[in-house]
Image (cartoon, rainbow, N blue to C red; front, side, top):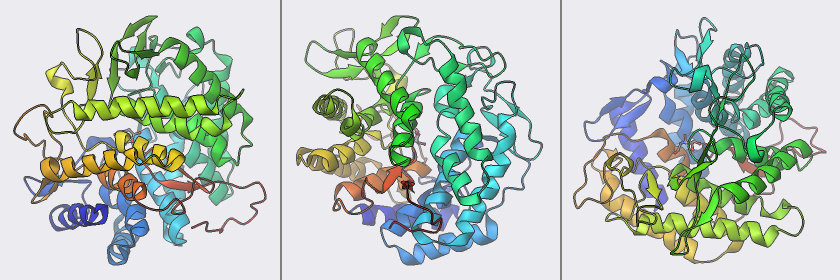
Length: 456
Ligand code: DMJ
């Protein structure tokens, strides 16, 4: 089924928005996001590995030809360093490792080089935004006193380690190792990492802590850096398990109805809200269970299972059986969105991602059942003639479509669904880690002298 869904999403993108970043499935035209400046083709690059894994050979070939002829980084554009890294660098790296086609390696390294000026700050903590022609960087104007964002500068590590591995140039890995060094020098309030860090002063901005938006994939990349290093990156390992300990003590709570959730922390006060983005943490806890210190393996699996259950409830308690952007545990509600501007669903993957990890790591059939419920809901409410669209209010009787087919729907949501219903030996966890946009990167085995090795 996910293959049919991929075909529908891809064919319509091809028909109405080919070469542009994303598809508007209702108006049947292209959608350009300023996150990628005027770099084009986000959906193509994000979808490459999904096409490959699903054995959509014709489509993969067309996509590869587009990359060869048209993917161009010599543009005067201000881009989001994080978004371009996870979608474009990540997508190209995976396409290279899966297919062995040199063009993807070349483009990934070329783009990596374009991103390097972002690190030209007093501390080496990179800017959020970068003009890839002039090399001038800056931060989001809304981010606490000129700060960089934890989930942005903390989500470069996997890709940059691979860029060094593939190019033979150590500079990429050095840049991300320095980020670790800066973080390790700083005092952390209650052992937690604030979402904001000033790249000039090297001091924390506002003390907001979140395992959802602004924080999320920083934690994910600590764990995955350790796994990707064939469990040699002891620093990454320690930082991850220490952070989880602090998260458990200060952020994880249980509602009176018995649902475990991860709250947000603002200068010591809890906001009893959990984002759809936070739901990825169920899969992360389960993935990290095996290496958990002092016999805590079962406990980390249990954390994953509880978060999966809560996120499933957030879907089940809506009219459309698709989860809201954020849900609350206060004012008499549990796992329900109460604010109108938190009721949307934009084809995000995190809940299905967690089902996939829980399935692989426990084989409890309920995770496939839950994934199937999501498939049915997507088909019923998000599928339209011209592709798949997000929904403005998942509690409503009638769909109001937002008219965007996000590129991560092809790279993540559909890939994780496909993996959920595949055998465990398709991209086995011993050999692959997924970047935060679901692009698989090979584990760099200790005895792995051969750069060209293809672990497919
Ligand atoms: C994706 O780009 C990535 O999963 C990122 O980590 C968070 N936001 C979207 C999906 O929701």
